[in-house]
Image (cartoon, rainbow, N blue to C red; front, side, top):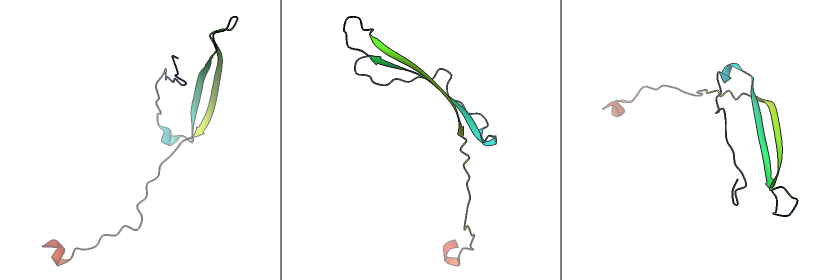
Amino acid sequence: MEGSQVFQTSTSKGFKVKDYTSRDTLSTEIDTEILIPLPKLPALPPSLGFKYKLKKQIPALKPRVAILNFTVREPTQTEVS
């Protein structure tokens, strides 16, 4: 990271969800590294880093669409002409 940049992200494998409608949960994995730049002082490294990995099952969102109170009415004579 450079200058005043405080956050950077990347996706190495891309983001794909296949056939989520047949699943109740999706497997997610967050693999991150936090780098904290340190002041330029003798005996200090340029930055301090922490690696963190989280694997979690999250609920799959399954949208439902319903049409309610739908009726078909016959047009009047004036509406047709």
